[in-house]
Length: 150
Image (cartoon, rainbow, N blue to C red; front, side, top):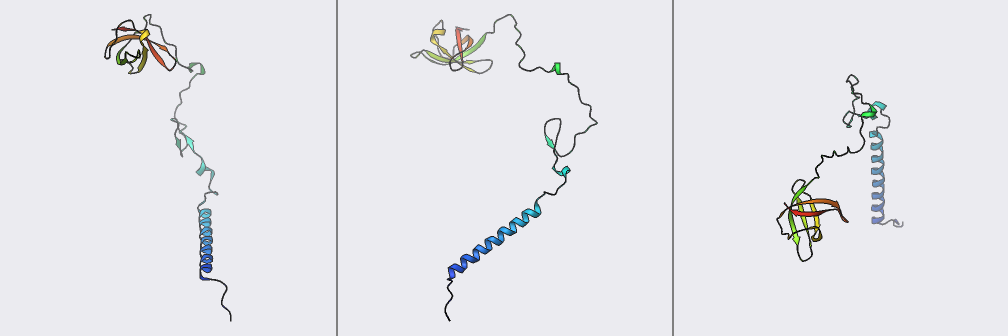
């Protein structure tokens, strides 16, 4: 009688392959059992409450809802009322480079930083000076112009 043509490693590979296949089938069966495909419609419905949050309970119909007229809804930003006086911004010079002729001003009210150029200044300026200024849109953002000592 002759020896078997299969080597030990070949049999081990086939055993591993069969075990993987068996595990895969077991996982598939467990997923099919856990699947809620046959669940009721009530289990799948989600409701949105008055705050926009999802919940599984239906909204309470006994609550009185406030009716809003379509004319009362304001879309956009309301126009700024003109008080008659021009708005004066007050700030502190945070940085100034006299050799290059520019600097930055920290607005005391909003904390924003605004760029300014020496052409928009009417006096000798130093860091930490209290100044008043106007704001205009520049090339890279808002710029301070008409800078004067406060």
